[in-house]
Length: 563
Image 1 (spheres, rainbow, N blue to C red):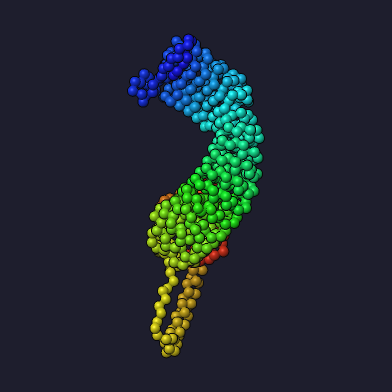
Image 2 (cartoon, rainbow, N blue to C red):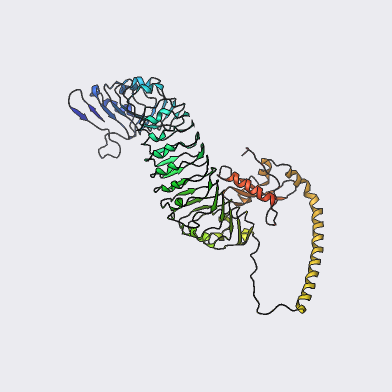
């Protein structure tokens, strides 16, 4: 604590916290127990700093009697209750911080007129509610306003700040924001409308976080003027149009998230200018064309590249040139229209942990090196056109670690995949064609075997048709519809003992129809998992049009809010 005395002399004192060698007070002190230390000097205390202690209790009313106080800081304690009205009567306060406590209540409607000299105002990390007082427009010196991590609500109509941190505010972004060239604003929630066209005026922005809002329209070209921007979060909005190529001018960007919007056209090659990028996410848009080569030359792209659920075409990235992107950990390319093979250059991604290339048009054989990528977990190769023998080594030695469903040309692999046997090995004989003495008896024997087989198959089918009459009624009952409670009963409440297997988007349980004991497989999709809905649709389309002895026939489906 420091203050200015009534004379020309300056005095200082401190309430020590527990880490100081000469602690004068316990870190669990009640702030009311220590108020008396101030009042012999209270006439002209200039600054009062009580932050970063462990004071408990409420803020004393007596602190509002300090004349001429300019700085009031009690942040990072365990204070509770409401802020005394007497504090707001100190019109000389320029810095006011009660951040990171347990305080509650609403801000006074006339806050801006009561404390007109405010420069910095910190309320973040408490339990305040209500709206921002319009009177703050009278605080013409106000530069910093932090209200995050509270329960404030309403709209923003006043913009006279340099630093603004909010949460749970709606409304549109006022056009006047572009005049505040010193503003560094982290964003907010429940915001709708468009980004201002002159947003490039905010040259000091380092973070632009407008994710999970209701913003629409196109992203202004002037956004490329934000050359200090390091974090750009525009995901989960309603943006449309093309991604502006001017985004490539923001070369300091570390994290770019623009997924789950309606962006169209191609990915601008200029986005390959991000020489510091760690995360790159354009998933779930309507992007077309191929992946720019420059994007694959980003040596710092180490955390995630997510281009999933678009309409991208061509060969997989890395097909012709891996570039410098060798430290990538997560690669999401599912739900596109990529063709060709898995490139051999992919084996250079030694740190790759997640690989999802499902729901594309990839073909040919799955290379063995996929199973030997030491960091790789659960590669998702579902619903492509892969063919040939499945590798058996590395991660392919565990049927629960690889997802290959929907690739109907695959064979071999370990038995747990239940794939058809691998193609027989061809033996080349040095002898000429077989003589008729060998061919004719062999053909006759084969014909007799086929005839006998047909006879036994016909008898077996007749027996099955008779037995099927017994279970047809219960089977047809389930085809007409099944309730969630019936599924719970049939799987013994989705018991772990009935769990057959699990994948990226759900789990499969053994079920028994209660009426007749018929065994079924019950697949439960986790719709909270990104991509589960699309996986369900793709799987349904595949099973609707394909019949195979290793694929079960779908009986029915159930969608319920019971769980």
